[in-house]
Length: 492
Picture (cartoon, rainbow, N blue to C red):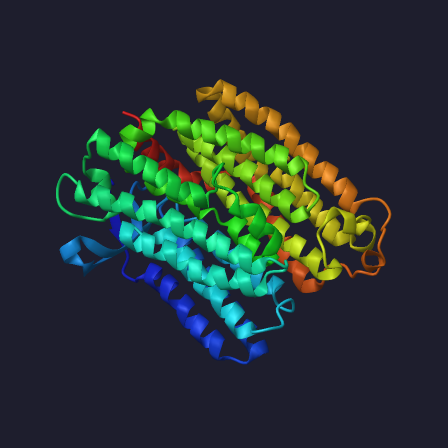
């Protein structure tokens, strides 16, 4: 990297440490006070992330807010933290989504509240660690540490009869994905041209033979591909979406740490192999885009429809990354941030709907808009944002991605344009059947609309979607320099 900039105050360490401390405090509080402690910690975390964004210089190439301390120096492992234009915006967006999840769970969680909210804060800590780690072993530790809170959140508070199966399946998939990631990092460190080091910046500066790069490329592609998820490694997603609590699914679909790992580690560390096998990324992206849309079109469950929609949209992100262009990279980051707002918001609304009706199956819905007009209206708005409606943040992100894909892979671009139509079809068709018409069930006719707390969370998301739709430059300015540097690492 061109530079590493440190700060006088360890803001990133504060960000990481305050969350487990808040989790401990939350676990020790009585039930109702526990949720307040969790919310206070999450709001303070958001404040710290905003301080980091405010102090970030988008014109500077390299990492900022850097903290580096020897951890296991004999093995070349350090406590090494920092952010750049690719990662800094994920911090406040992540903090915002966790605040929304805590508020959405306020009255929905009635058992073991302290444990539930403490697990949410521990999960937020691990996600923040993923976005800020610059040592590959430190990154891997945070990556694996997400499993414990997610296993309990899915297994104990899931809404489906097979929630424990969903928790086990998710955990096994992620453990299987973690192994090739770790092996890939070890192979890179052992074959580093200078010295044994797991530092991201050292591995970037070092040189590796093409054979080593090819091995590591496929290891990281499989490992991160499971989490993305890429087709055909996606089978955990619809199961978890159907059986897990909507709030936890909002985090899994809104925070695409697998795609972040792919663009941060999976490609820049092995540039020759990434360039040679770019066609695999293009192929997997095309299959994911098309398969996700077709599968969403045939779903009779709102949760599964949103899950396959997410699979289609993340395929578009992979295609944007595979374009190896600054526009594609910026569009990919923008779309990943959109997942936090739009996909996360849609699953929060789905959770509110499930709390009122006890089901999100199409047969149990119909006429929702008459009894819950605010819920139906906000779902419709976020759904349109998800398919790229102008004036929403979904439009500039998809536009950048489509343009970058058309410039490099015309065939893939035409597939994406076709899928945009499919996206509108499956969303509008499901919305018509589930939300419009006459209410067929008494529980829907009598269901209350959004409460003030729920409405407040969703309105904040809607406002941000509109702000970044009308003013996307606020995000693009921050990501531009780092995106150009990312491309320079891959293209000779």
